[in-house]
Length: 249
Image 1 (cartoon, one colour):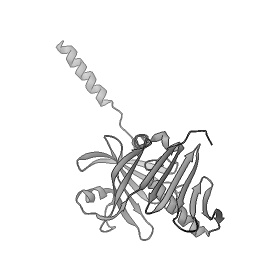
Image 2: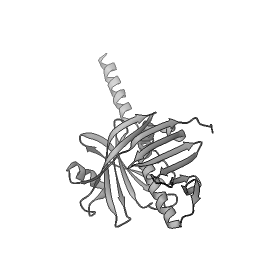
Image 3: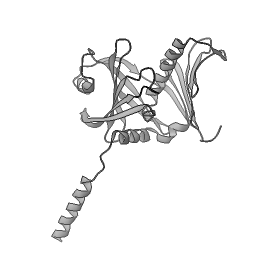
Image 4: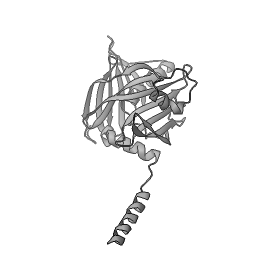
């Protein structure tokens, strides 16, 4: 009996030793699945951010990302599979290319952060696993995200880091380094997580570094030491989710 127990222990240890090591792709896949997975693909999501109404509609591979401005012209900016349009009083407005780019990036940015981690499997996204870390006593996977120039948008050179919980694969922190307007670093701490119709949302406290002359990949250490400066509160309100039926029009 003693030898059977020893054999069982050896087999158990061997099995644990063969446990799959997660890649950056595995971790992102689990984060997306945990946050809503396939439900994102056929959903209408409306929310308010800084007194502006945003709406996203995804169904059957088609999408519409909208920003509805609180003005007397009923201005709505829309990004679809075919491009950008500004609508005022139910008519399309012709804009110079510079404004099309500016408005498109503004609308896309709000929706991008709102729907995280959805979008992290887009074709232009490149992922790299960094060394794991512990923040506030909790263990995290640390994943770098960069973008291909083709399909990566105007700011394809920006670098993102996501801290994904090893326990439940939620994105609790994220940071990005941007290079426009003299550049900078932002670090975001999630709070107020909630699940609506099976899709997870969170708000964020937004921080910056005291200088840009820091190691971006160690910004989590600056946060732990209380050396970041809080800039703003990124809060989404009046969130409404309607899950659509795939294939219906």
